[in-house]
Length: 180
Image (tube, rainbow, N blue to C red; front, side):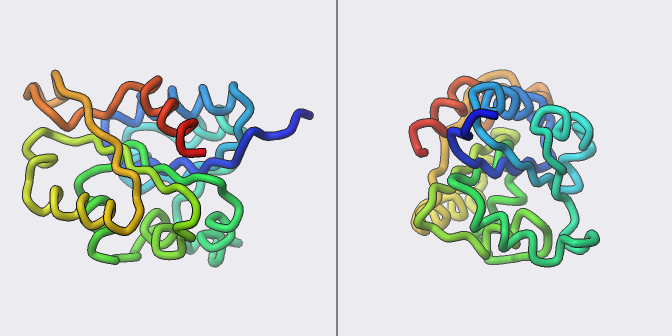
């Protein structure tokens, strides 16, 4: 068995862009990274746990109160070399900036050691991305040391055209490599 190139905690929130995130996860594993995933309950409305388990060969973390998971959010922050939320909805960006820790992703964030890289890849409707609360929250997170990745511009699932699309998988992969 070959040595891992690095340990990545890949966190997914509820967005149609989860399908793009799976492409990034697959590429990371193929390139020799050890990837563990955390999903919000809403992310699992777009993709299944089986998909991520098949891609990573690791269990998917969803509920902080599952058996043997009570302290796993702490253990994961110690294990990882880099954390990323991809796709990151307006909800999670605003929640993290407010310091709310009521699910797996937000408790991992509150336990995070910011000497390691933490990336956020936004994905949402153009109006949600432009909303003053989301813009303020993105600024707060950046001020705390979170690397806010840009967004793509173009056709959105709702039919709108504009900023807010998840970056393409290759661009996200390159950002991860750059920050490791």
